[in-house]
Image 1 (cartoon, helix red, strand yellow):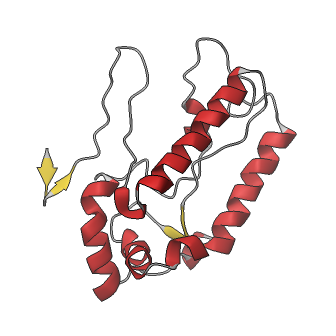
Image 2 (cartoon, helix red, strand yellow; image 1 turned 135 degrees about the horizontal axis):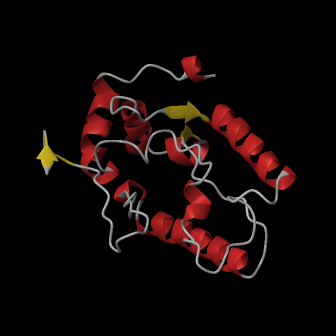
Image 3 (cartoon, helix red, strand yellow; image 1 turned 90 degrees about the horizontal axis):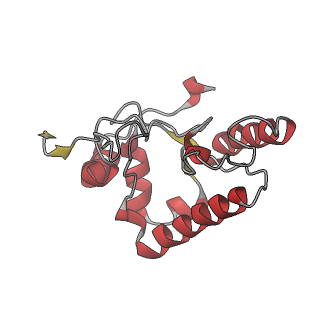
Length: 166
């Protein structure tokens, strides 16, 4: 279903009794970025399956140098908050939160999100469990479908800051 021209972020349960599938891909940063991120995720899954303790969480969108060097991407980040529950954090804020999650995983290796995977466990749960995703996993619309609107709104009516979150 489409609402206001935006594709609903409905998840799809491919196999009864298993977790849903979430498509969080956004081509705004290009295919090389998507490939690099997917390779990072697959490497974490591979290491965890081999018995390693892994800490790799979805992080919120942040105003990092690599994200704001492009005027289009900076505008998209400014418009992201117009699609609740999405927020875009300052780089230092996101980094601090992610550091706390890393310390938690290191201090609690038996925790399900960090320990080696059980043979029948969904490998993708590693990234979502305990994630600080900034709203992307719960947004009503797909990131790809709101991309143009994010850029437009970010240029004409940027979302308020994220100071109230901390």
